[in-house]
Image (tube, rainbow, N blue to C red; front, top):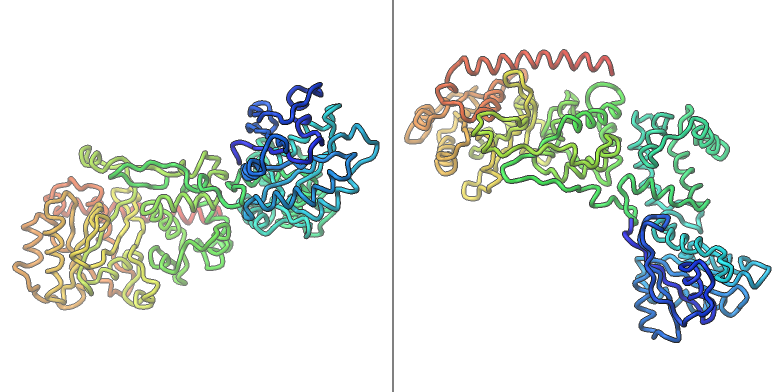
Length: 619
């Protein structure tokens, strides 16, 4: 909403423009009227809309055409004043003033007009019969007010309507010719309806309507008032009310009625509460609230944000199969201006046998977006109405900014839940297979992935000492000479080589020596394709000896060429190393260290699955 309003009064000489302004300010008709009143500013605290208002007078005797054109270009609303007892001044409204204003305003930013019939005290009849055809001809005319500067009739109302025309304009909402709301307004209100439909059943029940009313107007509706609203809809629409709840058609009808009855402020209050600006686009301040992320800190969703996202999943998982079908996913993202998730997402997170994103996969993708691009996450949460439904100040309330990683290292403990593992390896070493195996896909399932749907990320949960953590794997493009800071910034490094290719290990050794040998980032060597015969690597020493020299754990054998889902043990080890980078290599080699971590993972995975089944039954 605008921070101030600038009202310009124009019209023929002697119609009473200056008198109107002076009567408003002094609350009495002036004995002496100057040619032109000085610009007046009415403070915010004395205006109905709590917005400072500037009132500007125009005098043909004192101002040039150029000065008039400048004032027209600066005005937010223009009042064309005529005298109700002067036909010539009425004719000039269409023959002179409206064309002049149109010529001197930007075509894309239409300035609302108010027709003001002054000196109503001098006649017994109304000028509205003459004015109505003019109002129907020009859509930019918001309203017409007949008033009298002499007896103060409708003076305050005139300036209230002018202010309202700026703060609650009809133009973006309604098309007078079609007697219907404009498409952008319908689109915005449809999103608002869907966000407010908390159980996604296509109607707003009494609880949802009351929540909506409280959200927008800070007060619930009394039961009788609620019934009265529904009765109005029932009388005018066959399918406006269903199962005693308001349908989308009914919701849109109510807002059309508000606008037709001059209650634009009601619709605008709703639109602005849900983040819309004067052009019915979601406000940038709403979508991207301020969030400071210092260097070496990461971003994660907090508990409240996960609860919200779980409720969004739940209301769209119509068949209760704990996965989102393509239709359910499309329905979920219907409140977005575009489809945010492409086909690559299905190869980034866990899916079911049909290839649909599971509940765990859905939360994992949100976790990934928050970690990699928190601004995009804020935007997405904005489309879903997080701040409104969760009753938070903004989407930023759903984000946790972790502390500096250096502090974690000093204190030898971390509170983070998401750990990044960058996966390096030469072409054909098995990096992609390693990522997909983390999502439970063996080699046979991986062969079904189309190249254009391939993902360079994989994210899922692991359990370390009974704590659920997210491990984010990122496959780094194997261009040795162009590794960016993002390629090197991670919690653990994974170096993958193909045991059946004698030249594969050399790449891993070079990457480690050039980039990670002197860093504090823990590294793990992966001996991929271990189901194939192992061939001696053409390097100065064996992979085992290399790891021993550089105090790394021994190479971990790995294959995704299995009948069932590949083993997840190796991913638990990676997460453990990422969580405890300070643990000595002696401990890392100890079988009891890994046993404690993996047993905790197994127990909590079983408990987690059991708990999930319980939750499923309650759903």
